[in-house]
Image (tube, rainbow, N blue to C red; front, side, top):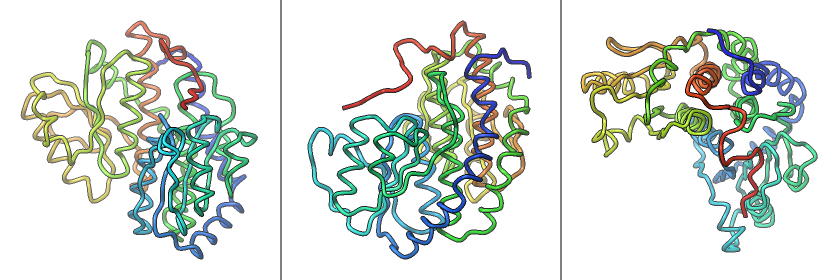
Length: 342
């Protein structure tokens, strides 16, 4: 699949090296954090993030809950930065995810969590940032400089850091082994041909992106990137929620992109795709696609790793689609690289 060399293209292509670097540099730190979390046995995990990082936090929610059984929820940073609420977080884990580590509302929320007794772990791409300084543990994403406004490699690095950390915490050897193989798999995923997705969306004005479980955060990220870089109105939904209202506007030729991993959600996602196809929707599916859907190739990997590989393939297709629709994916209108929300 040919794709012109924008910053978005070049930076997304660096994701395999970024993840390999991160895994090598944080191995001892992950072991230390895993031991601390097993000893702490937190009763709850709160995530704190904005934008693409918050989509990584959605991924973290499903992974933490399924691997450790601990309830995980996203906090609203404004409760600390605007309303000055004082949380009660003894024996809690606060997982803060950020590229820059400088947004005032994120810093206020993480600081409030730390002051309330939470163990604060920051996943941050800027190791010299204020967020890294206030966290008990600051795990570097090691993505390197990212100049395109559209975050790519830093998002994938966030997913890899979350996966590696949870694998260590839960002492899941199969998942730990799979994440070690992720750099090579990401390089393969980058070369997959997702041009049918770009073809599907070339003349679209709106669409749904769908995932379930750990893939929901990837569906959210894809929707954001289609807004940012392609001028498309995209909404992300869990496959479990589409029949609760969103189905009402699905008609003939309505475009939908589905992210599907090979786990217990797969059968239900396939059934939904079959229903959407029967309604006349044009559905592109990452992974195994039923009759009538548009298949998008996917590397066969551990189910937790599959969505990470799928978003890597998606980024290349989104870059091509952006240019084909007359946009500059590196400079979306009205946006800037670091958004400092109060």
